[in-house]
Length: 61
Image 1 (cartoon, rainbow, N blue to C red):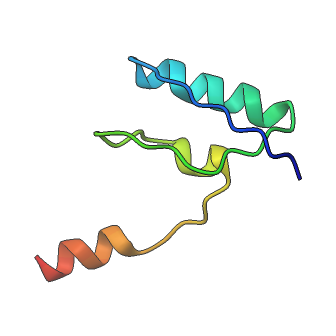
Image 2 (cartoon, one colour; image 1 turned 120 degrees about the vertical axis):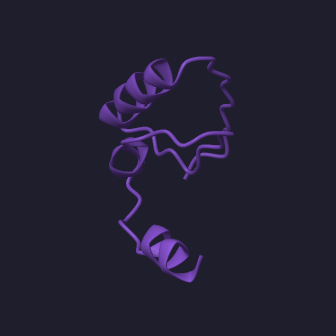
């Protein structure tokens, strides 16, 4: 396990998504992505399992 950490700032969600795909294809593990808005399609790219949190939030509203 590497002890190196890479931080990146993107101003476009499409560029972030494509960069994440490129990094994962090179074998780099992405631990987390922070964004003030939802980035559609990032979950399967970085390896997050699908959850039912959105459905639960919608029902409980």
